[in-house]
Length: 241
Image: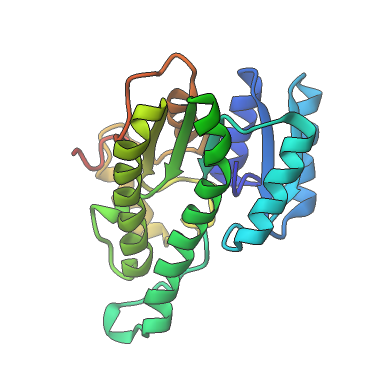
């Protein structure tokens, strides 16, 4: 699982491990946090390993996957959660380097990790691929054009893969959270915006990382065999598609 040392990634890694999966906790810089996640999983009776890699770099991803294969064999489930940096500003103040750079980072990372896990899934003719998107790809919010546009591209990428990989027994789905507490994205919201978002949510609160983890785990399950090319909106009813 990419980007698994904190927030949604951490919650998902812990849940998948609790359900019997061996979990790779990928991280970029937060090595201490990743090792704490691994230690927590192992203390609860699960199996996990930490693996550092910048998922935007194909060589780093290949090296990470090679290490996983040596220890555990092929990867059956890919959860791609790593969040690359992005600018928060209006389009009129944005440079192409900021908008185009985010698009490139987003798709480069998705391309690299998917390419790396696909051979083993294809050989086995079974696999689960889950990408973490955002409700901002469908419902714009001021200043979030870079992230929303990049994640919209990721969602369409997932649909094309679902069509191509379905005959190989590989499902591809997207989980699109709305605002989530206890994440880096939540930190950019002022209290006024947060209160308005809660007021606009029928379930009366914002999501927690564990809520998103439940949706990912549903898609990752072995018995969830007939859903592909779909998107799960985890937003408490804030937006209904």
